[in-house]
Length: 294
Ligand SMILES: C[C@](O)(CO)[C@H](O)COP(=O)(O)OP(=O)(O)OC[C@H]1O[C@@H](n2ccc(N)nc2=O)[C@H](O)[C@@H]1O
Ligand SMILES: Nc1ncnc2c1ncn2[C@@H]1O[C@H](COP(=O)(O)OP(=O)(O)OP(=O)(O)O)[C@@H](O)[C@H]1O
Image (tube, rainbow, N blue to C red; front, side):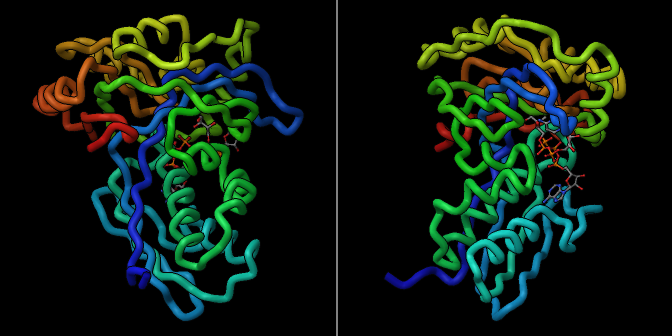
């Protein structure tokens, strides 16, 4: 079969449905217990063969201010794979940046994982190499390789399959501020650090979104209070989501500032997003989870 000239992939937004910080390693990284799921929203990445160089072009609503130089996680992923697999071919990658940057939904990590997936196909590299490279690019990159509901342990490198998600809806809202992940972890440590607690027990699957939301009420995002203390608008975002029709739960994802709401159906989430847009000039998305996106 002839390979298409350009390959395409979606780097879905990662949402931490809960995030417990359980300890700290001697190197300063924090140990986590988190359930990551993926929303239909995402960046789009395409890859085209190129003689010997790795090039990146960035388009899309959040391309402004994002550098296409070697410190972009997409190019870091390409260089890391080339080195590991001894590849001499190049690539022209195009990133359509639809997700806000530094917003707790793993945009850069999802892009890096997406680039690894695309390039293993384009350069015919064994995909078994990818899980070794992913953690060297960022703590969230391993979970973004699979883009399925996953329990994250360790600093994000120990992955266990999570429960199957029911059909349902998720809304994402970012009030237009980027927050720095290291700053949020630092504030978390300064304000008490990890507290002893029992690990949540999750079912194999959830019957419906009401069941999922009720399980989550026994969990938290430990990074939410430090993020709110650094960026109080996150509280306003959470409150605005919570009052939308049919909202079952609102919470912050990752290190913020993006917050999510859970809804019984994708249609409910889509309708709630339209209402929220009438009142706020924020980045707002509503729809289905990635795994159930038609
Ligand atoms: C908060 C999460 O998004 C939850 O999924 C991730 O743990 C963060 O993943 P990430 O953004 O890919 O993080 P990295 O780029 O690897 O790390 C950024 C910085 O966050 C802090 N960091 C990150 C992950 C972790 N488990 N403990 C940490 O303390 C460290 O200061 C690190 O230097
Ligand atoms: N392709 C990329 N997309 C977004 N950010 C990138 C990319 N490449 C490098 N970066 C840098 O990575 C940093 C983190 O951005 P990212 O959008 O991944 O944060 P995040 O959503 O908070 O991630 P996480 O949820 O993993 O903490 C930003 O400071 C940004 O400049």
